[in-house]
Image 1 (cartoon, rainbow, N blue to C red):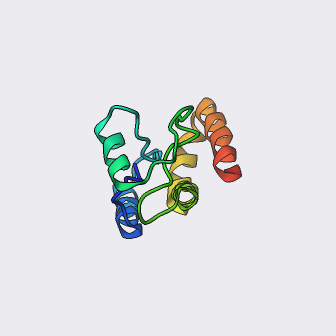
Image 2: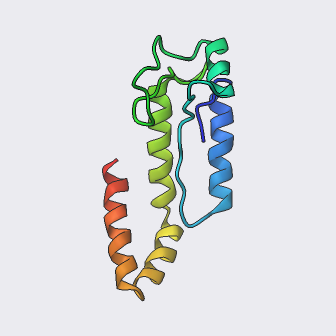
Length: 120
């Protein structure tokens, strides 16, 4: 998860570096979303990272402007770039394809998801 009010670009990069060191089968990167009544919401209010209204906010329409140091547009770009970079690593692709070739249903799912990642 990235985009907490206190996060700098270096904090986000440290999180991304950790993802790559873990080398898991799958990743997802979410941008922090403060829900009304939560501690995160109160912190965002104090830090001034909320938009004027949270009415109608959800995962796809965030109520924050990003962190104090990184804009929401930058967070979205970092998220997309990192997901692409993670899934398009040569060794990752070789490992997944060698397994998927033995399992046609899995191969079909990988192809479908891979096209979504490329099209992000």
